[in-house]
Length: 365
Image (cartoon, rainbow, N blue to C red):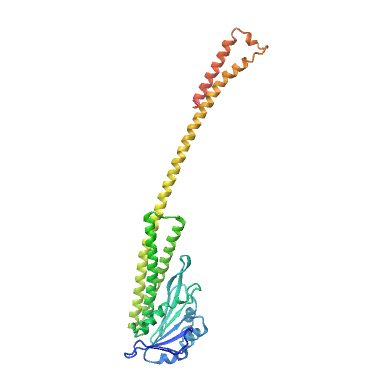
């Protein structure tokens, strides 16, 4: 059953989850000012859910009513790029992230902060990028609350409740990983079938998928590390250490799957790059062969031009002599010589032979 005593939709919601045999699963929403009295009760689990950490009321609850360390309150009210964890005298503080796919393959880091004490759990959502839909930040806490109200979840301690929230966040990481894996398989099929399309656009798709895998892998790996370290803190109860250890194991599983898919995608990228290199080499070879054929044709043409030019020069000499003596001017003494005609023929022959030998030595003939 559910009793609502606070105005819904505020920046801070205070809930008491009954843990008794008769009232297990009952969720009572109470005013924020009732929080100090709730923390003194020996029964139930107090769950404080902060949906707008930058609201002044959220700051008052975290700093004054709950008495958290100022640095922890500061971290909870600001965006944090990496997960972290701190152990305090009566509680532990976690910062973890889940992925949300944005435009053009961008991955939003959606933050969830948890303060886990012996009697309470405080979940703080965000702040988040304005481009992230409003319902994304509270998706896991809403799902856990629905399970409690339906009687499918009966948390006996704040650590068990925190594990339920984190486990739901891990499933969202797995769903994100499943979406990226489907994209990786599509890209792999496209490479092996040879339907590559525009290489620049295809490479962009490959590295978008790789970026998404790296993002979720980083989130899971860092969360796995900090949960593993917190589980061994001496301040954590045996039951609390068990649930934090389970969180660490689930993040480790996501990290391992992401690593496997990233290696698979790296293989696809290597195969694609090899295919592009091979195609480029074949195209270059064809271009070289075409250039060689063109060079050979040009060389053969030059050789023919040389031969034509050489024979033109050889024939030009006798033509010049014949042309000169064929002008029949009156004042040409050679025309009256007895040896004029034989000398002219000899001159033509000697000049032609000399030119032929010169061109032959130079390789033109």
